[in-house]
Length: 532
Image (tube, rainbow, N blue to C red):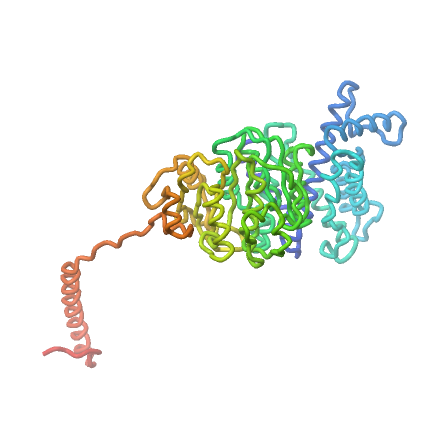
């Protein structure tokens, strides 16, 4: 698929979402359109797999008759193979195309409606059957309640049952016409389109977007940083994984990732993350996404990870309960992050889970660089006692959805090759402005990565600061203390300015004389005093 065809597919999907959602907010319709795309993907995946299983018999999966003994036996055989290989199952009559065709027939009936062709009940049952097909299997956790946000009874879809049915049918009919090109196993076309849609919904959701989506350029930067010295990862982890886009970006950047781990608090976003993994052809056995509060109830406590990436909610509230002082994640520091700002608590959690030879990169607000009290104590401990902070990177303002604040990336390594210094990069002025948003282009990202790898001083961009320098600054990591971006103003030639003023004054006098002449001819008084 060419880049132009990829772009057209993305635009097609967005047009469907934007045109058919009616009065529903973009972030509300998101769960429906993404859920239906996922259902279509699962259907096409099963159909292709069924055709493969039946190839020796010269049969096609969609042609099997469910109400005959032979057809039912063949369907059972495909079911057993699919559960083992794909982790779920759909019958031929439950495939997306079959439901879309039934919905199309309903749209073609008269305005009175024909309840015989209504698809809402069928669709509800089929989505539930997908989940139930995994019960008692290894994939059960990854498919459990996956479609719970597709509420087909919601009044948001329409005031009447027919209105709801018509809207859903229109969406399915439009999606049914699009070829997801699943036959090309090397092309992640649908995955890219899904990511595109998530990003488009995020841009329309404003502040809410920060709950589930990290802008692609930032994801790309973090992925490149954590894979800069190791592209064969046994594991990657995101403790606030949102829709999973950041984890998938690391997978794309690396040569190999054996297993993906994540945790997400929001239930809807957790479902979206699991769909996103499967859509990107990550086998159900190769990812482990959990739904819980990471700081209060960590789900992967005994694991250590080669790479960790995160974009935690900025300055979120957390319990800061003294019970955490007996938690190995926090106890060694002697202090907890304040309840009103959990930024450092996320850092402590991530450092705890980082493998000895691993690398982690986390996006945080600038306040973590210089705030005092408990945060200052934790920052000093990370540098002075653990010596695991490897780099501080300042990013441009206004690159995240819903907030315009400038942010930074902190890079941590437990076994550092440069234990005597910390690299500072000021990339805050390197961006393109697109409408109201600032955007990191690929060249901006690559410049940061090159500077991170080279680890050298570059005027007004990067500086390698010794630990002694940082200690002298009382462990304040505010980037301008280390990277001087001051631009000296050009010297002003006062003599030249004086000559310019003389010329201006002479021109003004000449203009006054001309105006005075016009006034005399018109017999009126000039609007200024006339000399002589």
